[in-house]
Image (cartoon, rainbow, N blue to C red; front, side, top):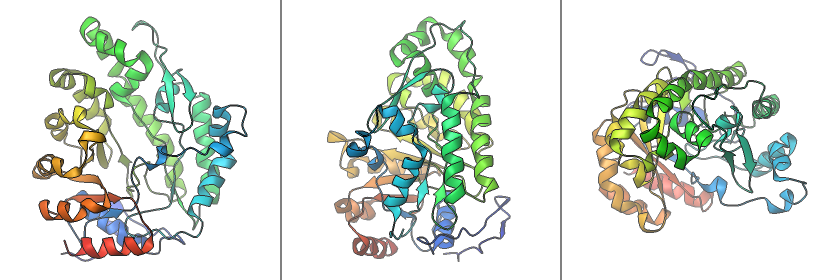
Length: 374
């Protein structure tokens, strides 16, 4: 096993500079980042990385009492001071163990990128969704840099950056470019028909999207880097360079041939130039395109989301996870605490990033001892 790299040194292999980020609740920041960087390369320093939070926990509980004080749910989402203060209350007095970080990321829901093209976002208690606005493929499609959603993301980001020093990290918003973006603009059912009836229109519109995505991504990356922040979003895995979470939830509705024809080229363009890409595979419907996803050369890792009901527990997906490992990619896996022993017995630890719900600091230390012996 290799030793921890020196914080602030230049990583010759990656060609990037790393630095120390002083955080009151995360004194082991450097060690945690060293484990993550080893994980990107399917390597281990002393143990696999562990994050003590389930990735879907954000959407499980609404702040109903606070929401009731606002005339509309949109106003609740748009209240910058409240959203940041609510986050500060959540992290107050908390220590962040292992590869868990205090991260505020400006959030207006998964379709905010589509909203910046003119889609109206409808806000619910825990998420938002886009109203389709693209009626046909002759209609102009352009990113509106004066969108109220971009203005709100700017304000949320800048307000958080102004007070974050020593307290928390600031990330960037959830982004769904590519065919998920087009599904929001057009409507998923209509887009399914378009793949047969108007394939040229689909290709013409979607092939221009990666350029907009990179401009949008770079806008917020520049804001973060100007304040010595890392590149990080809702997944909570930071990079000193750039980190993106490509995905294609719409892939559950199309064939492998359609994925390769319409989706693969756009994903390729989307991930080029990003240092670290962790692909969000949301369930078995997306997983049927795994062969194509694993062929994307700029993907370092896969986040496997096994779903609920019959798609749990995790052990039925061990062959799929091993298949990802065999392809030379790392894997992010959400587990229930009781599954950990069996999972560790079945899977090699190289390239595994574990995410578990926390039962308190004592249990977190027990998990880390257990994982260190893997």
